[in-house]
Figure 1 (tube, rainbow, N blue to C red):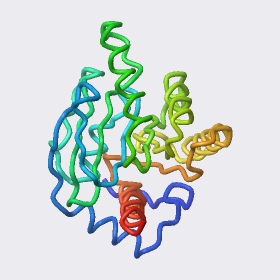
Figure 2: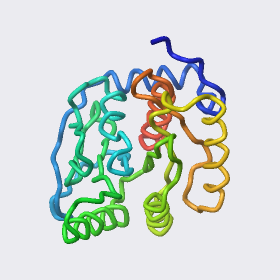
Figure 3: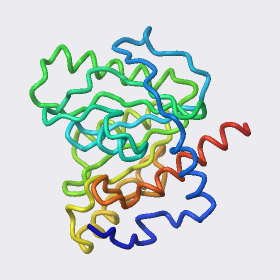
Figure 4: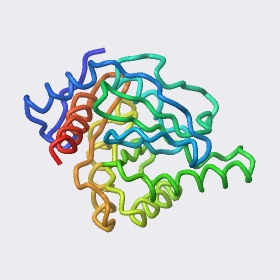
Length: 225
């Protein structure tokens, strides 16, 4: 399937140099570090970190696999809530990717949901090397109540976050543009929200180079600081 030409609002108008930096970063080896089911198991890496958060069926693992070009880096499943711990991946010794447990799971036991929620909140508040969270939102459905809870948690923890729309290949262009505007208006009310929204599709590749570029820029800034 040919990739649709991205609009400026989808790409954030990343320049050629930034896109190349992103390509080079994500061409490096990405390896699993550890899975942490408790705060005391979270590794001390000393490397800038980006977290990926989203509803349990938003396509988070699929997006991570698309970003790194590795089909089995993060496990995907038809059963929402499969990720039960924070999984850490090291990218070329320059960036840590943290895959957070999906939220909004309807079928998990209440005690387990409470434990995951506490783990995520403690991670967000205590992780000094966390440079940004990518908040994944399904482009077909927009921001839901569970997403708003996560946005409030990110605001409260003073963690900068960027909304990344997923599954954009499943939304027609006019509806996608309307969704982008809708999300932009809501984000304006949140103190920790990054103003740039990225629209992506792991299926046709749109937005993947631009997201890589944004994360490479974060890694470069952290190295200089």
